[in-house]
Figure 1 (cartoon, one colour):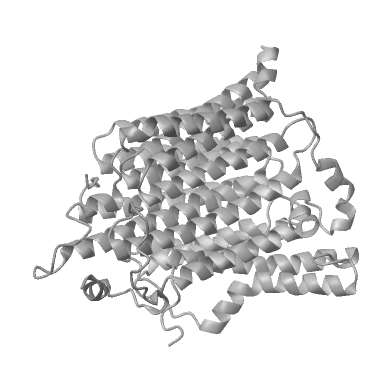
Figure 2 (tube, rainbow over the protein chains, first blue to last red):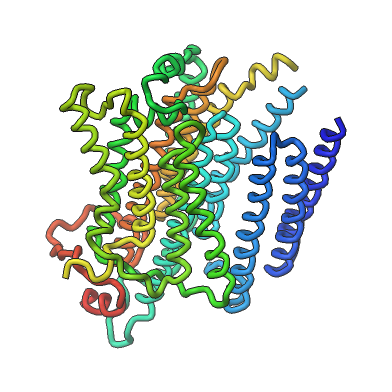
Length: 98
Length: 331
Length: 133
C-alpha cells in the first residue's frame, strides 16, 4: 500500500517535471535555453518516473533494467543536446531556408 | 474507471497520431516534415504497445523512428549539398536549367495548387470511408491464434510470433529477406558510394558516448536475438538495433569510412537469404517440404537462421544508409 | 459509461484510425509534389495499414493473433528497405535534374542513356561540369 502511494506520488512528480520541460521547449526564445529546459527537467522527470516504477518491479533484474534505461537515456540525451548546441554555436540558430 | 482511463488514453494517442501525420504532410519545410515523421514513429510504437504487440513496438521504435529517420535526414543533407553544388556553378556556363530557385525546390515544397484540392479530398474521403465501413461491418473472428497455439509444440520455439515468422510462415520471412537484399542491390546499382555530406562532430563527446553505447547496443542486440525464442524479440529487432549502432559508428567518422573488404561484406549481406534457402532446400530433400524443418531439429535450425538474418539485416541497413557500392569496389 | 467504453474498444477505434491514416497519406500523396514528402506519405499509408492489421488482431478475448503481428513485423522491415531505395532514387534524380520533383510531361525516349552504374560521385562539381554540356 505504501509502495503504491509512493509510486503514484513519484510518477506524478515526474510528470510535473516533464510538463515543465515541455513548456520550456515550446515557450523559450532560443536554442540554448530550450535545451536547458528540456534536458534538465526531462532527466529529473524520467528519474522520478523510473524510481516510481522500481517500487513496482518484480525483482532485482527488473530494477536493474529500469536503472539501465535511465542511464542510457541520460547518455543519449546528453550527447544529442550537446550536438544540437554545438551545431548552433558554429552555424547559428537553425533557420528554414525559406 | 480504469476502462474509461484507457479509452481516454487511446483517444489522446490517436488524435495525436493523426495530428502529427497531418502536420507532417502539410508542412512546406522538409526538415520539419521529417522531424514530425520521426515523432509519428515514436507515437506509433506507443500505439503498438497498447495493441499488445511488444514485438512490433520494438521494431517500430528501432526501425520506423530510428533508422528511417536517419535515412531521411541524411537524404535531406544530400539534396542540400547537391543543389548548393549546382548553384555555385561557373559564371561562363549557361544558367542551370533547374532555375534560380532550385534550392527552394530541394528542401521546400510550396503549398500545393488549389485545383488538386477537391479531387484529392474526394478520392481520400471515398477510400477512407469505404475502409471504415468495411471495418465496422467486419464480423468478429478469432483469427489464427488458436491454430498457432495448437501447433506451438512442433514449432521448436516458445514465442508464437517467432514460431510464425520462422516456422509456420517461413516463406514470408524468406522473401522478406530477399526483398531487403534486392533493395540494397537496387541502391548499389545507382552508383558508387557517395560521400556523406556530414562533418565529423568536433569534440570528444560523440566518440566517448559511442564508446559507451555501441558495446551496450551489441549486447542488447544479441540479448534480443536470443530472447526471441521465448519472449518478444527476434532477428528483425536485433538486426535493427545492431544496424542503428553501425549507423552511429558511420556518423562518428563520416569522412574516412574504413574500406570494407569486398567478399566478406557480400557474404554477410547475403548470409540470411542464402542460409535460409539452403536449409529450406535440405528440408525439401529430406522430407518436411521446402522451408520446413523436422520438429526435433527446429530449434537449432531456427537459431542458426536467425543469427544469419540478424547479421544480414544489420549490414544491409548500414549499407543502405551509406548508399552506393563501397569505394574501391570492382575496378 | 460502460457502454461508451465498449463502443470505443481498441479493436474498433484503432482500425478506424488506421483507415483515416491511410486516407490522410493518400491525400498527401496526391497533393504534395516533392518526392521526399511523397515517400513520407506512402510510409504514413503503410502505418495506417499496420494499424488496421494490429487493431483487428487485438479484437476479442485472449492473446492477439500472432500471424497478423508477424505480417506487420515483416511489413515494417520491407517498408524501411523500400524507403531507403526510394530515397536513393530521389538523390539520383536530383543529381541529374537538380530538382526532387517529378517533371511534368512524358519522358524523353530519345535522350541518350549513360551507364550510370560505374560513376564516381564524390567530386560532384566535376560530374556536374561534364553533364551540363
